[in-house]
Structures are given as C-alpha cells and as structure tokens.
Image (cartoon, rainbow, N blue to C red):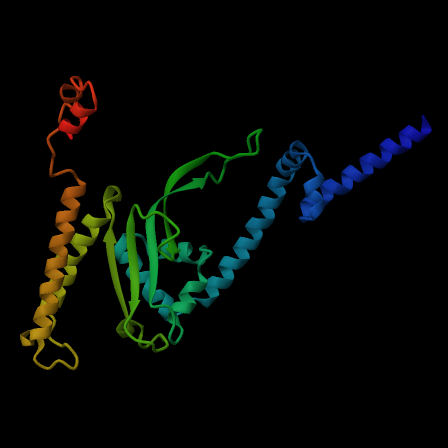
Length: 273
C-alpha cells in the first residue's frame, strides 16, 4: 500500500511538472491530455491577459515616442480621408503589429506603398470574460490597420501612400515625395470603388496637370494623349465588367425539361446535341 501511495504521489508530482511546463511552453505540453491543458489555460488566462496588456502598453508608448513630423503627416491625411480624429488614428497606428512597415516606407529605396484598411473586423469584447470552454464573445467593429494588401479581405475603405522616388523620406520632403489616395469597397464592390477613384479623382487630376516633367509640350504631346486615352478606356472596361458582375445583362432562362423528356435512345441525344 505504501508503495502504491508513493507511486501515486510520484504521478501527481509528474503531472504538476507537466502542467508547469505547459505554462512555459515546454515540449512536455504534448503529454498532457487535452482536457487538462484547456482547464489550465482557463485558470491562467486572466493573468496572462494582464501581463500581455502591460507589455502592449509599453510597446505603444515606445512607438508613440518615435512619432515625428513624418508620422504626423500620414496621420493627418488618414484622419481627413477616413473621418477619424488624429488621436484615434495615432492610437490605431501605434497599436498595430505592422508598425515597422512605416519605417520601411520612410527608408531610402524603401517600400513603394503603405496601405491601410478601415473596415469591420471581428474583435473580442474588452470586458468579455471567459466561457466554460475557454472562448470569448466577439463582435464586428470598425478598425483602422496597416496591411500588405493580400492577407485580409478588402471590404471597407483603403487608404494608401505612394512614394514618388527612392529618396529617404524626411520631415522636410514628406509632403513632396509621398502621395496619398483613398477609395472604397462598398458592399464588397471593389470595381465600383476603383472606377469612381479613377474617373472622379485621378483622370480629372491628370487632365488638369500642367507640369509633365521632361515632356515640355504637356497635354499637347501625343504620348500624353495616348496615355490619357488608355486610362479612359480602362475605366470604361471596369464599368462594363462591374455591370456584368452585377447581372445588368440577363440571359433568358430555358426550361430544359421539355427538351429532355422525349429523349429515348442515343440517336435522340445526338439529334438534341
């Protein structure tokens, strides 16, 4: 009996070690039954959340200290374009896990574009408590976040910054070297948003452009005219594609039953074909 008690005590000690290893991320976690791991996660979640919140706050404040006139220029453009306050935009940026992309955009020969999405995303309720199964309740909320443009579905508003050269972006040249634009994707219709952006913003801006760099003739130059014609044609193609997708062109539905009900043998099928 004493031997059995000792063995059981040893088992309990081993189990305690395994649970402790689960917390530290040790490979011993794999030997735990699923139910044990989940229960321990639930017990530690509130503590872990508090620790993560503290770390996130430190990170945000460190990033806030890095904000200079270049960042403020981006923030002001985003606030004006999207309709948020500059404080809201700043908070969103310093809380973003892709904050480092901004520095890569500012660097010499850095990123050519910097994208932001502003749209509904599923977020955990901040005041939500854990359920018995370890899950939390979520809800759709508007969120501004940095994106590379290919990982998330685009369903809201896209704001973008484009570099005009490979120069390092400084506080003194940011307004000359960086262009800002914005277009929407109402109800997931990205073609309509792009069509509106090009036809109502870009084309009028191009046609009113006086300085075309090395092209001294400006709008009178045949190459410039060909370019503007191509952009107009592209917008027309976008419009046609959008209308096709929106079922503006309806094909007549055919009741096929009346054609197949009298098919009796292979020759009938051949004739029908």
